Amino acid sequence: MNTPKEGFWGRVNPFARKKWVKKQTDPINDRLTELDASTPGTPTTSRTWIAAHRPAFTRRSPQPMRPTRWQTAAGTQAQNANGIAQGASGHVDQLNSTVKGLDQYRQTTEAEVAFRGGQPILTTAAKKQLDDLAASVTGKQGYILEVEGHSPLAGSAGIQSSERLTEAVKRYLVTEHEIPVYRLHAVALGNAHGQSDDDDKPVRTSSVHVRLMENSLAAQGASPPHEDASSTGAERP
Image 1: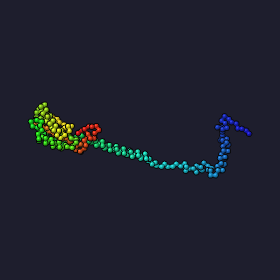
Image 2: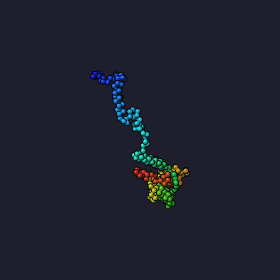
Image 3: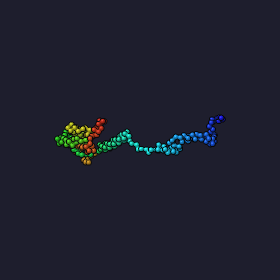
């Protein structure tokens, strides 16, 4: 028996011709055919085998995914956060409106308190005027009292005289009616006229002009700003 010679590549010749390759693979193909024929129910062709197993390779259409419990909880939290943000935005708008109205005062009432001979002594009629004025601000917020002192004297004498008169009015309102000091804004004008006085005639009598000024807080009946800012301890009119 002649043993085939092995070259540099071994028994496989990479440069073999088709006839040589066919000659080497024919016995293998014949043996496979015999095995397929001897096994019942065995598909004989690759095409038959693929047809038999086609359902296993059929791609199923993707099913819609149901939201998980975590996704549902996350959606609920997002909705709650959105509601809180909208509520905070409305609260900020309300605060902005309130702050804008703090410096917008309007006069609601006034009183002209007269003094005899420039002496800082309140008469019974003068006290009655101040009592009525103090009663009108009971329970109110967002108001101030403008107190202007006038005197017929000129120069520093008139300023000092009108200052004593304004102090008498302030003292009475604070001690008798517990009007907060920070709500009283006083100025001693002497014989000069205030900005709101339209009369240019010379001052003839000693008097104190008291005006009640209210802002939007008093008109709306809102709570005082120092209650909203209790954490800072600040108080505002």
